Length: 236
Image 1 (spheres, one colour):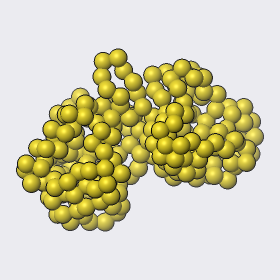
Image 2 (cartoon, helix red, strand yellow):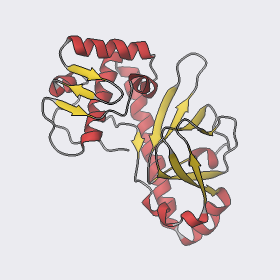
Image 3 (spheres, rainbow, N blue to C red):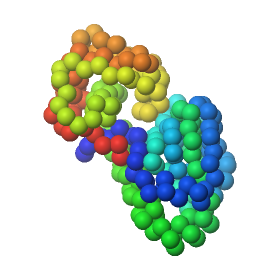
Image 4 (cartoon, rainbow, N blue to C red):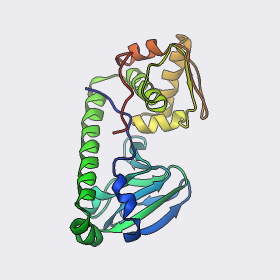
């Protein structure tokens, strides 16, 4: 089964045409947008920036379940189910601008006049459910080192886009080892050990906040059990 980097973008483009029906809200990086005990009676459309949906547990570290970027929605699951976010919270990963649509607006004028928006929302939920299935399979069947290698491969492909990738590749990371640990639900020291092991094997040269420098991308693919010549991973 294909692992997909858990960042969702541009899956709900039609919502950008009805922002006048919502309320514009601006959040600074690091701001809590939805608390786990906060009732959610609407959905949010991301116009600019990136938000993280994070899970908090009593026995393990914080885990970023997935991120939502421009042209996508968040909050729809809790809006139409329990009304609260449960164990999850939503944070502004970057400075972001969102538009908030109350549930009655979605069920009223949007449903009546813009049914294609509901199809986009349903499609996004389908992608998220599929992502949970893949993540569950990976967490049950792979060791930590393999999971770190695997997500690094697809992060590179997401950043580079379609097309072949050579043996050596350097990208602007925009991702710290701590961020990677949260995405995988691992402790940071576990990720650090995996990164150190990749350095010792000559596969990885640098992994900083601003740069991911890989010396042997095919070898990284092999360790992550990912086909070397696979197409770029989609964002959903």
